[in-house]
Image (cartoon, rainbow, N blue to C red):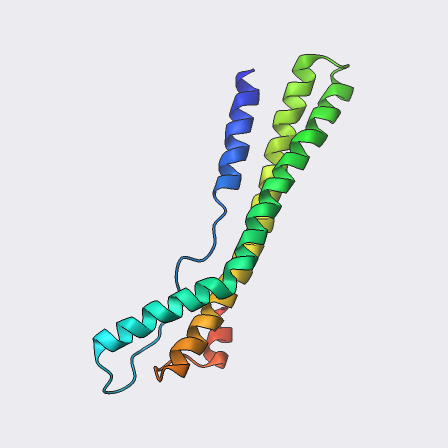
Length: 147
């Protein structure tokens, strides 16, 4: 029983690790002669714009991780019942193992979604800051760095 609870807690904690972008991962410099307080205002406006632009992708990652964890638990419970001859211990163990496997799969899937969301966030942020006259890294520099 302790193993089942441990698997459930670990599986759910993996799903809880899913999150969207919290800020840009690129450096943008103020335009020459632009006051820093104006640059900070641009930064806040562009962070909000980028957050809105990447929101759908990061929400999809969270939903996908939760769905994979639930599906893994269900499949694990069925497999545990079949393998364990219908015993409660087999169902519980199978559900725990299934949840763990599903959560791990969901976490890996959501990592990919998070990376996509971060890229979308960075592009939107960079476009906004550039449109406001700030100095943003070029697209070729971003691709060399893996953004």
